[in-house]
Image 1 (cartoon, helix red, strand yellow):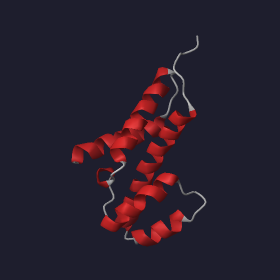
Image 2 (spheres, one colour):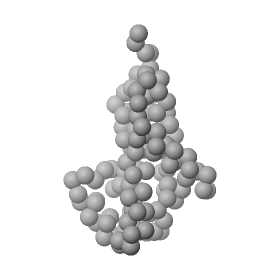
Image 3 (cartoon, one colour):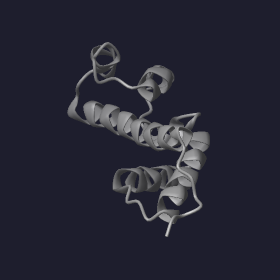
Image 4 (cartoon, helix red, strand yellow):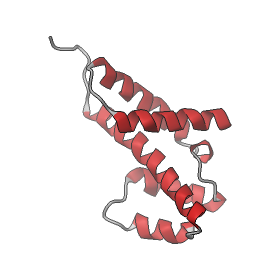
Length: 114
């Protein structure tokens, strides 16, 4: 039986955006915790082959404030909502998306800190 729920390229993009933003913020927080200069890490990652658009768009603003939580990211509420919708669509077609679910949990925890 085929589900009527469609997972479009936009839904996949929303999954990736949510996971990438959560991972970017967590990686920068980890660097800070280890004592690695976050500005240096930003410069290394932003020009690396593995960079992502969420890192490029949102980490610079956080870098100026040196706050490394999703609660400090202005785009987090919108990205969270899009990610939640995408995760719901994956659940509707019974497609596992464990990284996206964990990222969504991080967004929800960040909202509790506000």
